[in-house]
Every structure is written in C-alpha cells, then in structure tokens.
Image (cartoon, rainbow, N blue to C red):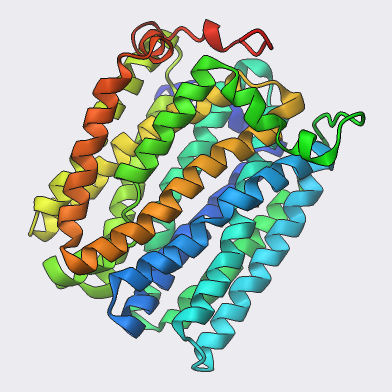
Length: 423
C-alpha cells in the first residue's frame, strides 16, 4: 500500500508538493464546485419558475457569455497587476453576489430576470478567476512539473461538476434551494481564505510604449499567428459548442425522460464530473508527448458519443453511465488542449492568451446553450444532443487535414507552435 501511494504521488500528484500551488488548487476546487453547483441550482430554479428550457438556456447563457468580454480584460489585469491580489477581489465579489441571490430567493424575489442579472455577474467573476488562475499556475511550480500542475488544475475544474452537484443535492432534495445558494457562498469564502495564503507574487509584461487596446488584444495576435495555437483554439471552440453545451438540456432530460426532477439533474451533472475527474487525473500521469497526441485524437473522436448515448437512454443507470462517459472524453480533450496551450505560451503574455482561450470556450458554450434550449422547446433535448455529437465527429475527421493538428495527433509534435513571431 505504501508503494502504491508513493507511486501515485510521484506520478500523478507531483505539483501538490508546492505549498502555494496547493493553496491555489484547493481554492480552485471550492470555487469551481460553487460554479457548477450554481449551474444546477439556477437551472432548476429557472425551470421551476418558467417550465421552459429556453429560459434555462438563457440563464446559462448569461453565466457563460461574460467570458467573451471579461476574459480579455482580466487577462490584461493578470499581466498588469499582482495576480494573487486580483484573485482575492474576485472571490470576495463572487461571495457577495451569491449571498445576494440566496437572500432574494428567501424573500420570494426570484423572477427569471433577476436570476439572469445575477448569473451575468457571477459569470463575469468566474471567467475572470479562471483567466487569472491560469496565468498564475506556471509561477507556482518548477518547469518540469508544469504539465502535471496544469492537468491537476484542470482535474479540479472538470471534477467540480461532480463535487458541486453532489454537495447541493441533499439541500435540493431535503432542505430548499436557497440553502444551495448559501452553500455556494461558503465555497467562495473557503476559496478566498486559501488563495490569500499564496505568497508568490507575479505579473506579466505590459509594453508601456503601446496603447491600452494594443496591449489588451496582444493575446489574440499571439494566438492567431501560431499555427498549432490557432488550430487548437478553433477545434476547442467546436468541441464546446457541439458536445459540452448541455447544461440547458439536463433539467428537461431529467424531468421528461427520467422523471427525476432537480435531484436527477444533480446526478447527471455529477456523473459528468466523475468521469471528468478520472480522465484529468489519468492525463496528469502521462509523460510522453506521443501518447498524449494519440489520446488527444481518441478523446476528440469519442467526445460526441456520450451525448448520443444519453439522448438514447431512457433508463436511470444507463443515463448516469452515459454522463460518466461524457465526462471522461470531454475532459480528456479539454485537459490536453489546455495543457498544450499553456506549456508553449510565454509568461509575458500568459494572462492574455488565457483570456483568448476563455473567450472561445465561454462564447461558444454561452451562445449554444441558449440556442439548444430554444431548439429543445420545439423539438426535444435528446434530438439536440444527437445532432451536436454527430456534427463534432465530422469536424474531427475534417481536422485530420490540418498539418498542425495531424502532427500533434500522431507524433505529439509541438515544434510549429514555438512562440516566435515568424510563425
């Protein structure tokens, strides 16, 4: 047993030996759990108030769309100011926002439009926190442990779908929905306390001879001038839009197909999180670039199958299995994408590149969740999931025609992404 624990630590948990990284990792775990718990709780509250997947999609859209406009700004702030200090403010603001939501629900002031406004504020802080944390991680560990640190950070982001959903499930089923919102506020408080323990101070580099907008958008120029960065960003955009924009659909699937209500929605989200956690932890132990490239292609090809299986299933057990399968493939794909991008990005612009990544992820998921909710009201949530899964499979097959991605898939070659202006 001792040997097994030592092997696990030395292969999968290397980055946790760094105290500052460990504190950030714990803070990220609690904040991500709060974010996914809010997706479930807000979605179910909205579904109860309106009975419409369109409104659930609109609330989810409001929570995700801030990544489009707030991520570039927070990326700039992460490169301009002390990253830890920026994170502290973000945690405080999110805690206050969720406490207000809990108070309004307790007071009976819980109209869909109020939920939308507070979801927009929460999403703004959430997107900012992800961007700044992404920029900070490489400053907290040695270079040889960077890939492990990024993968573990992604494990918390993805696995939080499970921890967040499970944390509020008894509150939704036994207590009341406002208790779930108070729990989310407490998660942000714990996150604030741990991020305040991080002692490392870091900033990026802002060119004082350039204007604000030039510095702000340097991340976009940096990404789109580099073939592999550009290719990965675009296929991630398609992946998020076609296979991961299901949050607006889960309440309808839980109610219409499984007759399980809000608790069923929590279980389905927890299944995705469980699979995501397993996948991300597995990738944390992958050392070979060649193996990582092949896994990247495998996860891409199979990412669309989980939603199709969930759409087809009318049985509780099979539905949970389908969500676990979704989590494994989708998180595997996203973790490798994120790892490659961060490992080849220079620290001087890391915050802004993280912002570019968040813009594409958040924008695609926000818009598609809203569209999916509207389509589901006309046709069905199952039909939406099947079509998205099939289209993404076709996109991956087409991506084999990209020289940059083909080299990455079959040899793990990242040489064409070396950050030089000539690319």
